[in-house]
Image 1 (tube, rainbow, N blue to C red):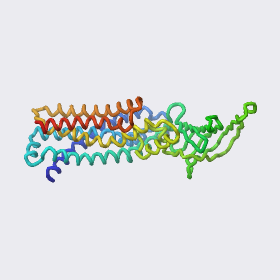
Image 2 (cartoon, rainbow, N blue to C red):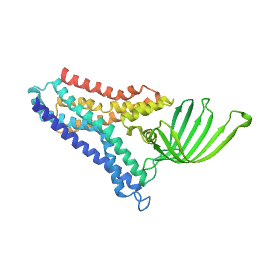
Image 3 (cartoon, one colour):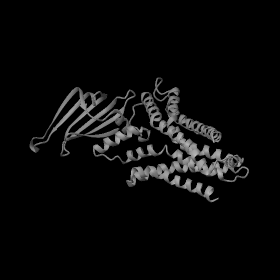
Amino acid sequence: MRTIRRLLYKEILAAVAFVTLGFLALFFFFDFVDELRWVGKTGENGYQLTHALMVVGLMVPSHLYELLPITVLIGTIFVMARLAQSSEFTILRTSGLGPWRALNTLLTLGVVFVVATFSIGDYLAPLTDRTAQLIKARYQGNITIGQTGAWLKEKQNNRSFAANVSALTSDGRMQGIRIFEFDSNGLLVSLMHAEKAEFASGGAWAMTTVERSDFHTQAADSASVERSKLPSFRWPTEITAEMVSTALLKPDRMGTLDLFQYIRHLNTNGQSAQRYEIEFWRKVFYPLSCLVMVVLALPFAYLHFRAGAITTYVFGGVMAGISFFLLNNVFGYIGNLQNWQPWLTAAAPGMIYSMLSLAAFGWLVLRR
């Protein structure tokens, strides 16, 4: 069995690596063409061709994370179908490779792909994506979303705060900060505006050039506004740099732990976390889809091929992988709109394809 496992693992790893490199090269080309429109638009010392190549290169781990389950499916289908076409898998079956042993062998290799996918998506991709964003911010402009930037909410004792950050600079500092303070009745108490701020130690924002307005509305006949200017101000808060980056960047580019902490922050402050909860569970279940893909590919080894038919089945594998990717995204959008259970929304595509693959395996192997 050791020789059989070595043969299967070698063939599948080589095929998956070849397919993955092909897809990554294609995405690298598309991303590079897209980045070319920004080259030279910010002056001689601005965004140049080398910067575009760096940004596109740093986006490769994210594409690898997204593509790995699909390339695992395509590569495994190709190997299984080729072994069936050349009757090599029939020889392996007569050598003792029964259906359940073959399934166990592929699942063991699938665990390796699960670990690789999780490691890339949780550690490597967030780091490279953030680095790429900082490079673009340094040479193109600051990181921001929409017209007003990011909004975050926090409760402190009997007061609540709404913080608005317009943009992040390339060195991780905040620009265009507005902090609204409300009392327990929801009335506006104060408003602070700062040009710049940075994350200080001990859980605080160190703001510079601060304009503060205090609203005194206890008595309707003596309502007043007190304005003051401060060269600096330290605002104690539990809103961290990761939370601000989360609000300005896409949640699917975050690590699982960062998403979990941000969800806790949103729930503590009474904000909707449905979108981030779905993304959190997708980060949990998405690597497991590699197991689904190797199980889906196994029935192809038990089919009987005619000359040239292998390309048709490989094309079918490509379509199956693309349909899984689309279904995964569609379920995320529908679950967010319909307020489905986040874990069920994230797990449903994998469960559907697992049942389909096990049904095909049972029909081809056990019934035939």
